[in-house]
Image (cartoon, rainbow, N blue to C red; front, side, top):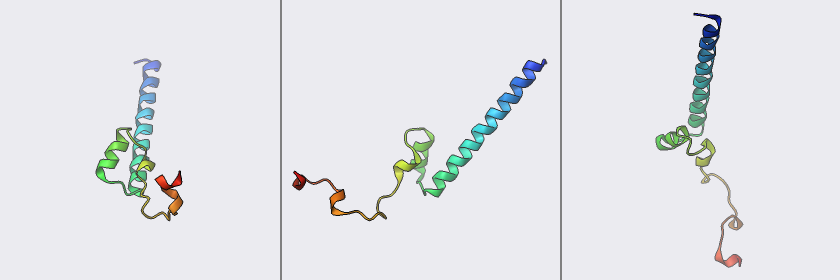
Length: 72
């Protein structure tokens, strides 16, 4: 095994560790946002971002925040 092979092995280990760290942070972020299992799966698959599932129920919305045919 040459030096080049050794360095490639170290790079592969570092890449795997970085990938695991990103996955761990993503899981923590999904837990912090209280995502359901199906939402977590969509985020893991890359179909949605964590913030796409924010719940707007707790937000104070004005009447003007909704689209209406009366606005014409």
